[in-house]
Image: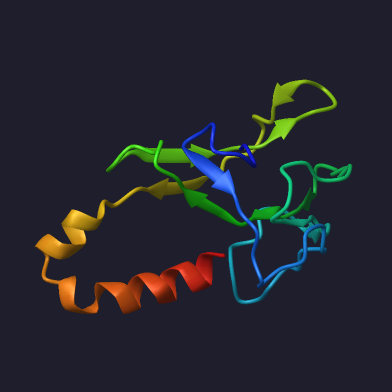
Length: 129
């Protein structure tokens, strides 16, 4: 995912995390996909982590602060996956992908959320970043 505006999504700075900070296995949270958690990284200033090596019974979480930009497609379905910069290939051995749909503002207005939309968007943006 780019840090500039060349794609549909962009990594953005966030006051809620520190770039490179270790992730934690929060319980209760997502279902653990293996036995042992290995700390990953939080990213809001770049798209590359340090080296993370996992054995077959280990799992990690890598979290990015992202936002859709004007190049994104309204009602577009997006799946996010990781890329191995050392090996030059996408990582394709995991089964859980982060997914998102871009909901255009006019749909929010259509469903009667117009009067509360500015406050709601502010709260959502505050949680994402």
